[in-house]
Length: 219
Image (cartoon, rainbow, N blue to C red; front, side, top):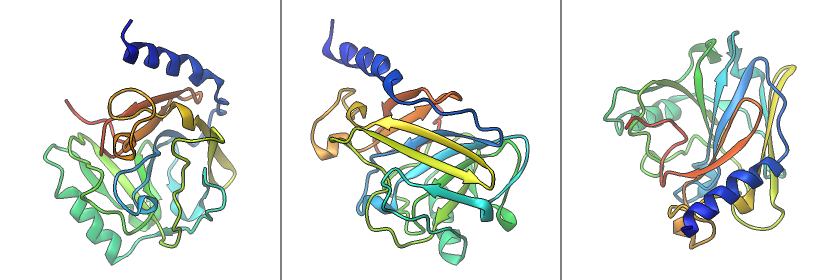
């Protein structure tokens, strides 16, 4: 059996070792770009989540990062984020579009990307292939360390998000992150793009689409 297939099977089986999340009623975390391309990496990581049946206000959002010593710095929306969003949209050749929320309101059913900094660089992690409208919000600047643990020891890392009294939590195993060759390990450049996707019950799947934002790109 080819080594890549063995590795993929092992990752899928071991993924069930990672603690499962509870079902969030007002939103669901769907994907984390754990090992982002670009430097500083801390400013280019992203999370994708889905809003439930009721609109949410970004003013109510708080996050406990997987790298726990990083504080949540709140959401910033200003001229800089507008410029960054415009730059990101200019790289999309498909029919998708990125929008910042009006008045901080994320509509019911919306797909949302959280960028870890207003300094997100449009050239590092591509949104090309986006085939839907996704809302994007930006954490204010200030964290200099990465928000997620990449490959290494202290394997299990956990991300928790809260909108008021509603919360969702997901975990992943750093040792199961996949490189661009479909295996584990490798050079730092090969590891760039390590992403974890989640089902509604928190089952983790480890993928790597290279320097790609955590979206579902069109074929």
